[in-house]
Image (cartoon, rainbow, N blue to C red):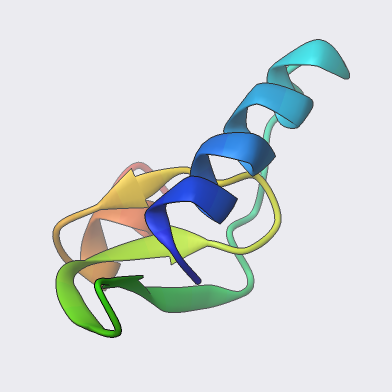
Length: 58
């Protein structure tokens, strides 16, 4: 998923009530055709440096 796609997802998620997300589907962030060091939730668009950050509060 690209940064731009993640940004659009985050905006849409907020517009739809910003409900809690389970972050079940995590993908690498891609920029300029290559994998970036960040990960993005493909459901809500939340972005973190590593996958563990998505579930640290659970």
